[in-house]
Image (cartoon, rainbow, N blue to C red; front, side, top):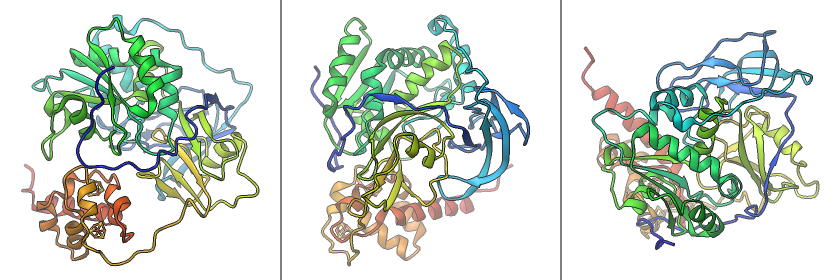
Length: 445
Ligand code: SF4
Ligand code: SF4
């Protein structure tokens, strides 16, 4: 095994990975799904179905709204019973299509072919048509990442099997249970990008996955597993690339600028299905965790299933422990839901059902100027100074301190002994810095 590597900064919150030994369970098909047209970064998809229309599972129901966009597919067969604004997990009403299931309609059957025999453009087309976006949570349309300008040579593809957020274990289970889909997806990505090397980055707290994938890759001279030290946010693109290759991405630049494309392991597995079977993205593995969940585990669920139905299908909530908060995603970068009738979307990696003790918010006191936030920041930023500038609306100065380099990882807030909600301030700061840059930009044309 190679020496474990890492990046500077960051921290190690408690793992809380209590479901890593729970095999993936396929949940039943839900009776209703809510499919938002905006489940990705970029332009929302455009709905092409209306109320009373019949749809079949796997059919495209919303077409991409541009190049940086992704289609949305029906994840059950049935009748469209709603088309309009429905609450999005992010807490805003947003256009969606609601389908009620017709149980007697048979599930589609997908035949498989060898995707590696296809020309790269056809592979990319199939990925685009499948509606695939980054399943690690970033939700960037996959085909866009696989379309670098011709001037950028990509020599290495890194698969992100880090899953550094506490509590989440969906990717870990996928690596253990379906390694061949992941490896095939990696090879397909490399074929599209003409990359010479493929690396799967995995943290040392998943030794079983490292051993298994190492074994699977022992006869592949250009593919390898890179063990990584257990540290958050090891799965951030910049941190992962630095750890695996020692390459630093300059401020404002992208992985492709240093010859790299990063994809999540679950995305790679879905790429394999999209290319070999022309199967659209209709389901994903989600970790259910938290003291209030009756059966914490890893569940394969149809996208569009409401969080309430998802929890119910897994066995529901414990009767004797009152539910205080539900988080979508991980505890560091996820967000609290205020309505459980919002759906699981393409980027949902976890649902955390927390009791009062888990949901406790630290009391906020004055800044101690202790510098813990600075030491924890994996981007080398100055969170304490940045917070002051946000409070005083000094957007230009904030820009010069590198506000837009903040990856909203939450390390600074986690390390802060004064309980200062730094990330909320930085989200606001980034929004204003971007608005100021836009104002200052010369008019086009
Ligand atoms: S949230 Fe931003 S400022 Fe805070 S540690 Fe992460 S990158 Fe640094
Ligand atoms: S960690 Fe908190 S208390 Fe310490 S300097 Fe940063 S903001 Fe201030």
